[in-house]
Length: 283
Length: 327
Image (cartoon, rainbow over all chains, first blue to last red; front, side, top):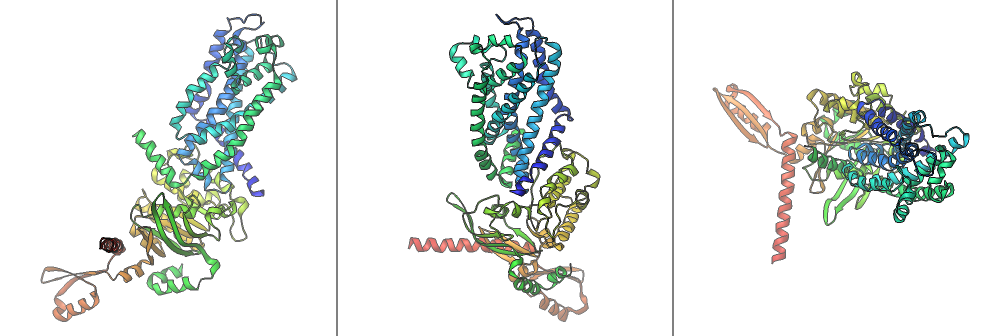
């Protein structure tokens, strides 16, 4: 117990070192800034459209929604991608060869991915506060809401991301997941209120954590009157906690089992076999 | 280490020290190890032990089960049957404290590419800090370790910028960062140039002097002969030979090659009793014998002979079985 706990510190340090690498390596830096910048540009164009019966423009509506989407998407996909890549290249096996290394590795990944999500939110939010005057982040309550939505979002998505990453055969299979993810985002009411969609799509959208993260972010960042554009003209905080809570419980139940199964299978020869397959593809 | 030089001169000494070693000093103990994939037995009945500070080389043709054996000992693979003890525990049930006593040298590919050499060693070392004992201080200091594997001038380089040979040295450094009591190396010197290989051999000997038990697999017989106190030959899923290089060649009593020249003509003769042959040669021709060379069977000859003999034996046994069935 005592020694397992000792992996916390190296794990956090590992996460911070890898987070620093994300923002000091040219290629990674591009990846971190590309989509946020695209999103801001899109939202600037959306500013000219108004929403019916609501005193905010579409750009202002989209900004918090995009924050929720980034949080959900990154939480689900980024950790999965890292696990798949680092299982193939042997990083995971190295962790397995070290006492408490797997625990440290996972803590590190959680720190890196959470940190990258947080910074990603700031990259959009900070310029957004200057560009969109409809945002209302001027009360303590708004900041509190932002904080709990963020934390709950991480707990709801990261474990599911870990499960996806453990089940992927190779980093290439991640491509297969992108299409359904895009579909999920499309029905999650990010760029336009979900209430304008057909009923059955609304039902599908409300199963997705991305919808609830968008809603939670809007409840934190938009003025009170903006609630008129939502389903039932309510921010539905209770339901948000409920749905995201279910995702969290499912994820946290499955993740340890699936991760342990994945870790058990790692050995020098499994990594070598994967390397061979990947090399065939490259060469 | 004085005992090692004595060992290679007198194989009997090795056997007696190994026999008289106390039970607690047995670091690896493998009995009746079996590994089956589906209906195919990769390992039939593998038996061997290793004492503290001993260097063992596991030799064998491709597909003989070397990697499977080493992965079972590392606790990375479950076995089908048999008793295996590594540092007093079953690898299938080893806890993290047990894990801290093990070193595994893995073949890197492109992991940790953005990390810097010293940074990664420092980081991985942290996991071993809670497992220091009175006898062993863990981990190995990162700067000393970087120097020990000859990477000092690359300490602050990104790992992806290292050459293949430098990466392999880093692999070794990662394997020993926790000052392991037992170290596993699977094909450690693939891709080393001769100088790197010699430095690696020196490092392995230093580790063994510090009472580290080392099990390595290799295809390089010359390396096995230089490094190992004891050589295990694995063929057909069994250990078919276990002993020092000298003992193995004696057991096989392979032929030696005698070369000489007389009156400007060169001669070659192979004999199992080369000493007597040379004496007779001089009795017969006296001073006219020149350029005398006696080349004893190398480990390679011994190894090839053993594997062939084993495979031939297997074939005969199979043929006998077939005859019995068809009768």
